[in-house]
Image (cartoon, rainbow, N blue to C red; front, side, top):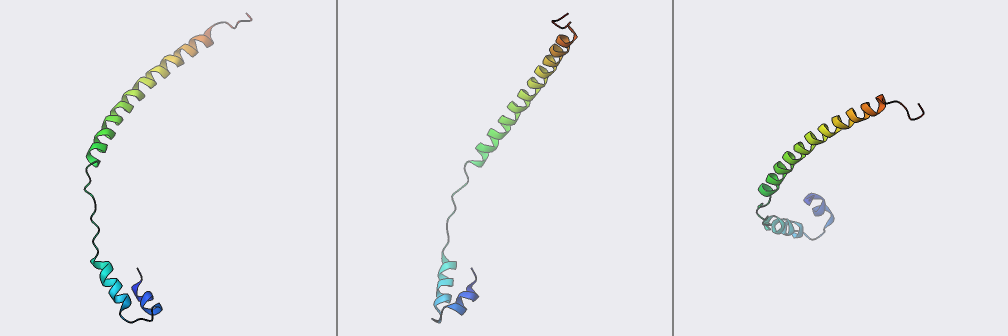
Amino acid sequence: IDWDKYKQLIPVKGLVDDFKSKYEAVKVPYPMDTFSSQVDAQIKESQSEIAQYKKGSEQRIQNYQKEIAHLKSLLPYDQ
């Protein structure tokens, strides 16, 4: 907040200083963070599941590429 600008714009003396002191006196309590540890644990679990899925997918891709190569090596239908 630009308090100096408000002091220039507000003609009532001391009003801006009063608001400033009251504004600075207000303390907003922030809630405790109780979920970050749970989220981090879920992220780690998900990452291991993702790694397993990627490994399985790579294996399936290799198998499909072998099948495609085999099918390409066969004679065409018109022969």
